[in-house]
Length: 241
Ligand code: C5P
Image (tube, rainbow, N blue to C red; front, side, top):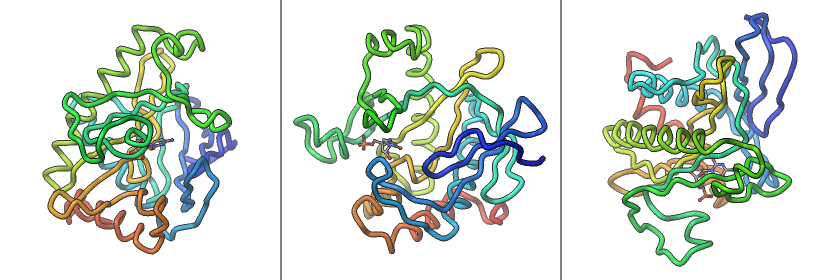
């Protein structure tokens, strides 16, 4: 399947149309950004590691009844995916308080959150991704109440499945962001990616960070080792490329 027209050039991924009008090609680039794109570096093979990790996690989710846009991974950094009309909402699930939550609210770093927090942010760099609530989502016409409930339930189910899967690999899923879109039938499907770019992942023994937080903290020389570690832990040897 060949790339045709570039339809979205994101901060770390490029999306192209293909000969099949129901499919897109998502190219995972080696760029790494932080602070709404204010800092940008190129990390060797990062696109491939993210695509491979995301593919594995999408397959695990599919096996557990969550529909994803994944179709195929013809090259290590190139995914063929179902074409979706993306909903501009970042659905964030938090199992442990850290990051922006502890900067904005009086809650201690590391506090376990049970039940988990589900938060929705508006995906709009120019507004710095402000947090939404149900009334704002409906006023902006981003989703109906029924769809908000569906996004919440799907995000919680994804959290349950991936927390268990990752813990078996010695990784705590601290928090993560997912994005959804609608297919041509209007069904809400998990899209985008699930990778160390959009998750906080901690080693379950040492609590060492295994995700993009290292880059956000300026530890650029450690970040790729962390991504490779996640890949090595979650991909069985006979599936490794
Ligand atoms: O920064 P914050 O604590 O709100 O991030 C929560 C989770 O959502 C983290 O796992 C982070 O990687 C992810 N996130 C993201 N993209 C954003 C904002 C947050 O992937 N624009």
